[in-house]
Length: 216
Ligand SMILES: *[C@@H]1O[C@H](CO)[C@@H](O)[C@H](O)[C@H]1NC(C)=O
Ligand SMILES: *[C@@H]1O[C@H](CO)[C@@H](O)[C@H](O)[C@H]1NC(C)=O
Image (cartoon, rainbow, N blue to C red; front, top):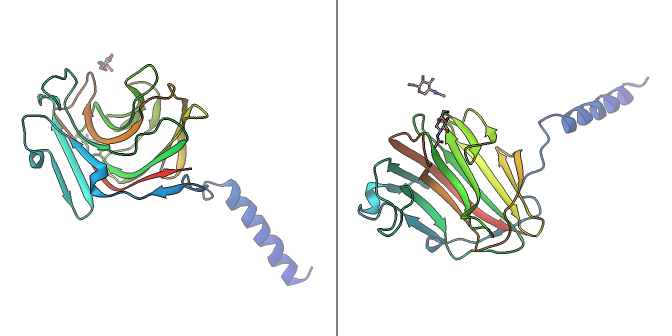
């Protein structure tokens, strides 16, 4: 066999190996169009009786959001759990295919907290809740999505195919979870910290950078 044939076959085998290994991942944003955002699109919700700068900072492109278990809700008339959250404003959707992308960081010690959600549904308050419990990410307090989430930046992509009725979650570009959605409604993306119903750490914090919204 000629040496050039040997190289050709070896390269082909390596290519096949690469394609079947974890090295080859279709990027979740492939085929999507980025929606331009301005600071106006980032509405902030925080305990109603404290100034924003006591629960939020935005430095060097990193939004840091924190809240305490005994904080007040975001509105004096609300009975919900405390939160400091970015609510993507002006891009509510009720059909089509939409995607949230952001790089998140959750410090060790933060537990029992929703770090990202799709708010709204046909029959419920939310379509998707991503919670951190002891370093694991869960769908609400149930299905395990990913482990080892503390003290590292992770890339989160959430695709909501409203027309197809499904939600897909990617961590670091890898599909980790897919679930049926809960029907169309007034839908929008959020991230930050929103205390779970129980098993909450006293201090809750998450950091976010490079938040993008895409659509098809
Ligand atoms: C988180 O902190 C606890 C207590 O300090 C420690 O035991 C644990 O190993 C830490 N976990 C990670 C993932 O760093
Ligand atoms: C808190 O954690 C315990 C033990 O894992 C569990 O049985 C309980 O259902 C949790 N409570 C809430 C409100 O999540």
